[in-house]
Image (cartoon, rainbow, N blue to C red; front, side, top):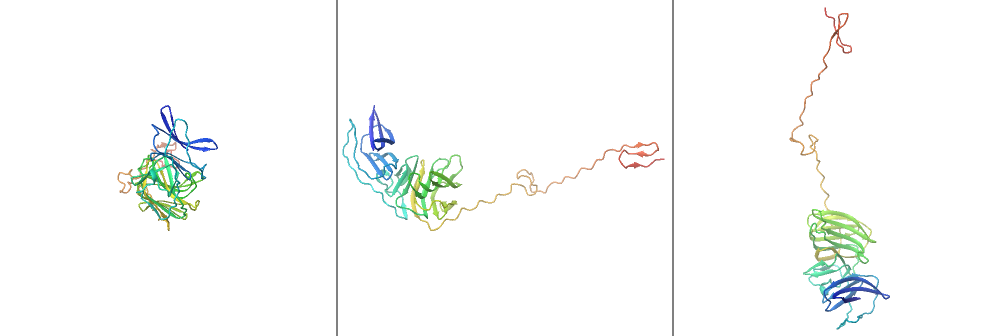
Amino acid sequence: MAEAYGSQGKATLSLYRNQGGAFTKLADVKLASITGTLRLEAVGNSLKVFLDGKVKLFANDNVLTAAGGVGMRGTSGGALDNFSYERLTAAAAVLSFKDDFATAGANAQLRNVYAEKVGNFKVEGGQVSNNASSSVAVLNGVSKADVVVKADVSVAAGSGHSVGLVARYNGDGEGSGYLAEMYGKPGVNGVVVNIYRRQGGTLTQLGSAVTADGQGALAFTAFGSTLTLTMNGKSLLQVRDTTIAAGSAGVRVNGAAKLDNLDVSAATSSPPAPPAPPTPTPNTNPTTGNPKGHDNHSSLPPRVVPPRPREDPPIVVRTLPDGSRYSGLDDIFISRLF
């Protein structure tokens, strides 16, 4: 139920679930006034409230998913007019699927081939932007094992925002599946790329890397057990996992990142793995064995220091009673002098 409520000069627009006479608030927003056309949409577990064609509230709820009646509810002091309703149906996407977002759905929303599982997306200026803290949308009627999900993305380094491509999605909310993400992690010189497995509410990182540029054509390929993320045709990250067999495909956005030109098609092979990192160069001078940079003339042969001559202690000679002389050292005698 969408409710417009005014009290003491303040207006609140709320979205409730009414089950057995118990009202549970799912979302609300404070507004200066609530005058205009109010619209409530319910498609699957996605609920949206619009005022004069602009989305004001949204929520996902799995408690009441069966079909039911429609109507209106009011209290004293309120007024309404021009009540109407229409049946909304979800359409199935067909692969290969392409969307340049030049045409939006009603009220600047995604078209009905998408199921918004978390949050809300806004289609504006031929791009898709996140209208919540994070949002997830997948294609209706798609369940594929081997799939390529592509989109043009833009993620600034250090922004804290992210764009993700989803494969083998199942369930509701964040659901289960694989997520390949480009993340502008604060404090990192570059953009972080991650591949995750989400299952049973647990997010497991399967691999991570850092790339210099967060803008371009991002592609996520799930083929057999191999999961590969590429940017502008260059492999960034590749992992293997056999946990999730098949599912839908879509996108996940966190923060103010945007995307365009979504392309979902069947995969026939895996892209090549990223090149192996170069072998580190030894950090010692091969001649001297010292750390590089600590030799003034590292290219010269080592300096040879001659040994110091041995300095024997002085010999003290004593004269014995028989007239011979004794040096004081074991087994060394000086012959008798006459």
